Length: 510
Image (tube, rainbow, N blue to C red; front, side, top):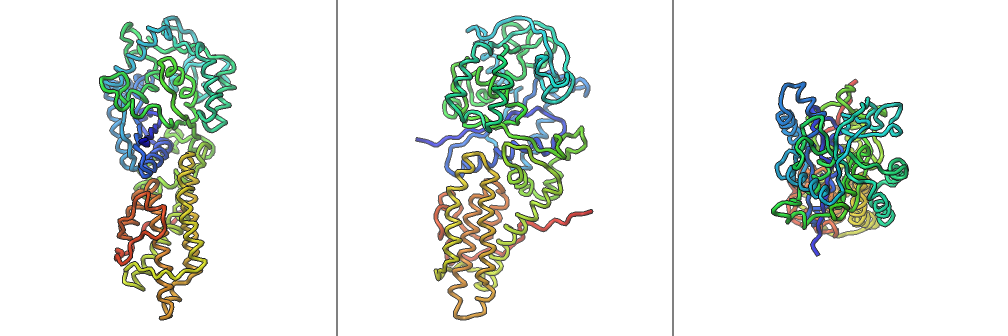
């Protein structure tokens, strides 16, 4: 059976100013997608932009341009940012794409025709920045519970989706699929805060503005932005189009990775939409935490949201990727600061990885003119290093499967630390002075080079530019995922290329 893997980020609201928080989910999903491709999975990674809604129409009016002109410029900037970060998405979807619009219109019409959407009047509270409807009891001190901003009363003709009809079926699905929502804290929050109090039918159209997908049979209505946005996960695969090949191949998604503030849309509204359409549900929705500064969200409006490209320019793309992947336990909030990025870079990328690669390749050039040799004169120290390196395969696979990317990197860097200690314990510089110890020296350097090669195979998913630089120095063709299973595949008698610094120590300026 073919191995397939479908992973998505939420499609992003086209913010005029991107900050590192916007990159968090995308970098993590990119690392997982890259790893799955390494494993041999036929992988599809989807991201994109959510371009409709009242707040975008309002911002476009303020800027004196049409909504489409407003989002076009920002989408170009988003794609440039993802390119800067080495994001390898398979499709970038825009909710203004013609095929998406047609798909949403067909979904809306089907749900209406079968009685799951009905016409009525909406009276209630609405938060424009979050594009969210709220009841009085859900507010926090009279404000939107998600963003803390003001809500306002809305009364307008609208269509409604029968969430209440599917409540029991949804709860049963949760019970039968305990891993559907992760981490567990998010699942408990959804049940206690939203489902137990009872699901109200959802307003799924608006008439007070027109920047949205028109309802085909009632053109004064546009489709509610969340019903529109959530549909991207299947419209991107050609659902309800003339060619459903991708949909039949990849759906259901293996995992939707989303920020914790939009979990409820993905585990309540989206599953009910799919149930009503008679489609399978995604296998998992993972709600991660936020990158925060001093306990608060990162935001340009708070003055703490520097453009990520500034960090990339100053420290390199892999330093930024590594920090995001390694620093924060996935699922929890994590603190971001430039100082923390520098400290993590110096501690791990400079002291551990960069130091190991440079020392090893430099010694091999110094003692054997860069030629890879192995006399296989083994001691217990060698066996310990080889065992740790070989065990990496199952450890890294398991952690990535569990979406614990930071733990996977921790395992890799633990082996790299052991390799640095191995240098101190075997003292190659002393062996080099003894003519009778040359075979032992060959073995020590070979074991180091092979450990570096195997670690670099896994690092291709996380810090790809650095992995490529390592392979170039090793001058090896053994870069496949399969080649990391077995210790000893680094070719003998090849000549290493000259050593280069992977990372320079960053001096912290006062």
